[in-house]
Amino acid sequence: MSQSFRTIALIGKYQSPDVAESVMRLADYLRERGLTVLIEQGTASSIGMAGDFPLATYDEIGARADLAVVLGGDGTMLNTARRLAEHEVPLVGVNQGRLGFLTDIAREDVQARIGEILDGRYVAESRFMLDAEVLRGGQRVFHTLALNDVVVNKGDLGRMIEFDVTIDDEFVYTQRSDGMIISTPTGSTAYALSSNGPILHPSVGGIALVPLCPHALTARPVTLPDSCRIDISLLPPHDARVHFDGQARFDARAGDCVRLTRSTQRVRLLHPEDYSYFAMLREKLHWSAVPRHP
Image (tube, rainbow, N blue to C red):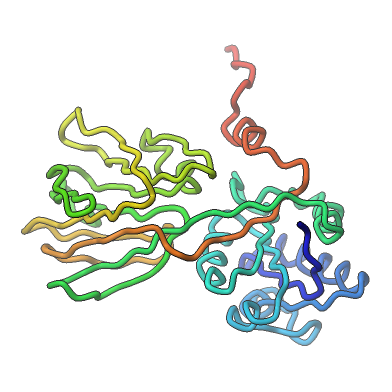
């Protein structure tokens, strides 16, 4: 069932001339359609749009907007998704980056495609997030959400770290490696893919554990049900660095526990009505491409 979109928020990658032009063109187009346009205040400041349209913080966008259009790459979409998840504002991505697994509208088609979505011709999709916390002595010292993945790695160390992996209070194994990627289906085409992790269809209720350069050749990626609780406990004397969607970061100490569960918050993505997940994979991963000959 389609919904009516009356207030549209525009969020762009900061300090990008191409994004600035796209934001201004799209804002003018939306105003011509009689819609209320909000510009995220950091976006407006970076592209010099102050005063042209109402500015809004992420919380104000969450309270007022019926739809948020994100212009940039997957990193911009990940940041926006985490900031707006609690408000359940639908997101549309316009690709102004490189691969664009989450931003599937080409910038040259933006007005036509956004127009179709505003007219109710779209495919809606829900993506789950990870609730991530770091425990120290049983007390929470850090908490955030991740749409793509949580990565526990060796940080600046020039050697492996060691940690215990526990699932729903059951000990699974002790691993020596460069770290571990804990990935959602959304993140399975990101860092986890480059580490030989599985590609998980967005509708799969699974979480992938993908070891980073494990010392044991038998340490393989494992897909777990998204109902489980995953604990990564750092063994002394190893400290580690924990990354959330490659954006937020926390320096963990030996003895800390990184705990991950499926979040109750979800991200709602809207795609053009002809969107196909497998067509996207063919394009981004060059499946079926003709081999190059020397």
